Amino acid sequence: MCIVSDKLKLCTCKTENVEQFKHYWILYKYQKSGIDLVGIPMLPQEWEIGKETDEYNYRRLEKMLNAESCFDIDIELRNKDILEMHFSCNKNSDSKYPIHLVYEFAYKNKKWRTNAHDPFDTDRLEKHKGKIVNPFSI
Image 1 (cartoon, helix red, strand yellow):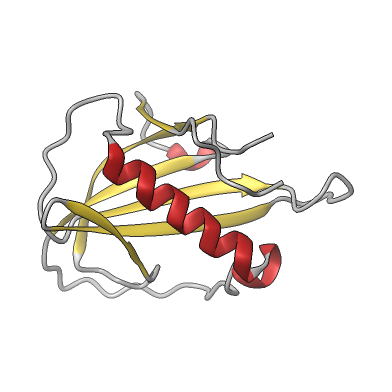
Image 2: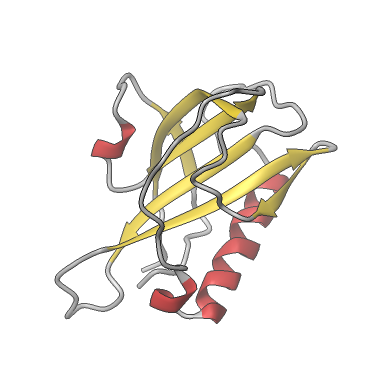
């Protein structure tokens, strides 16, 4: 099941490689950059989990982020900061391969708002990252 839990916690960790975790987050602090990146485009995740589930997850995550701090440490947030949340889940119990989901939020006027994920956006500098605990409803 790929429905986000209401017990979400964003924990910091002492690792440089958060991609080793099944579920992780990355907070980018806004900064202009002249770097160009090239990569492989990803299919929209709503195609894999359904538009309703994808929209539900975005609404639920946005509500939790704005209701209280989900981070385990105090982080100073500024306008244009970007939070990416990466999840790995199985669409159903028969699925052999997990689906990789990315939800992105931009911070503006003391609120998190859904943001279209752009893996080629280079106007940000990675600042904080960590593991996501209790990511999905059972």
